[in-house]
Image (tube, rainbow, N blue to C red):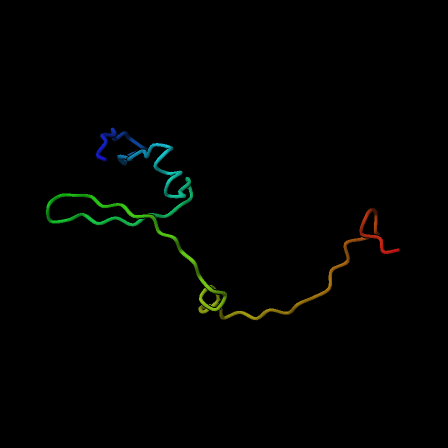
Length: 83
């Protein structure tokens, strides 16, 4: 189904605002990423990017070291007290 939406200025850029029903159907919010392709026919194709990374992928470029340590959060004050 083809619909028309208007462009508007967003700072010095021109923004495309997507209707709520479109973002909800695609599972997008204001922090989501999309990819786009401009075809030879001057058509703009926008696709959601659903990025899932494994732990290994997330840390593949990590070069630091991690040294775990125990933290003292103070006295027990509530339900965390073991009886």
